Amino acid sequence: MGKKKWCYGREDVICMTKDCPYMSDCIQVVWERKMARLMDKGRDESAPLTRLKTKLKKEERARKKERTS
Image 1 (tube, one colour):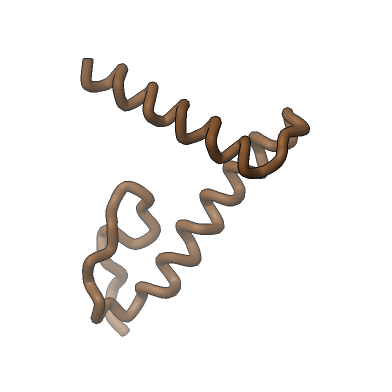
Image 2 (tube, rainbow, N blue to C red):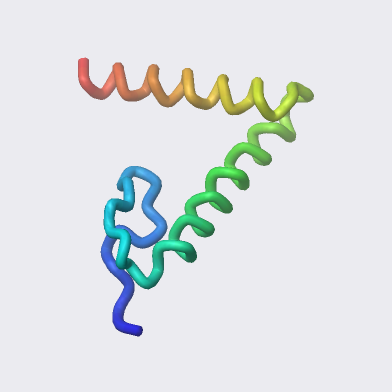
């Protein structure tokens, strides 16, 4: 296999290449990063994982709004 693409493991890029040889590895890397971030946030709070995910999504939306404003 050749060199990995520039998009490998990036969360802000949606993989649209169906013939990418690294797609399954890339998805696994992104998933592990997201779960690690959720688990780190979860240590501080005793809320269930679904609430933590909702809270993170709201925080991300707020950050995006601040950037665009």
